Length: 128
Image (tube, rainbow, N blue to C red; front, top):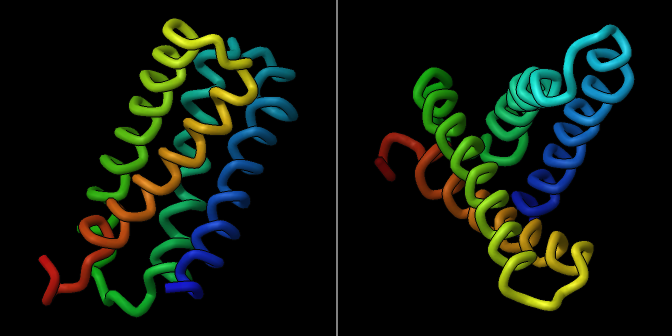
């Protein structure tokens, strides 16, 4: 499990850099509106995230690529929506500083994403 957590972090940071870099350094400077650029950045980062998690993080699971791709897209999209909802709730109903609230949400959603990816999206045939 510690190997998986290490790779989960490495792949996650790599995907985040692709997302941020594509939006901030390429897409918006080329004239794409930020919200549309964010969607494109998410889709590009998803490619990195799925490939990295399939090859490195959960490689021992032997999950079929097409199935894990569909499932992990649902996990990633759901994680994004949960992130936004929890962040909005914490900002609205607590006195937490926005940075503290975001840190709490990011840790909680990362844990949820890891478990969902491990137990469902990248589950091997025997775990389905």
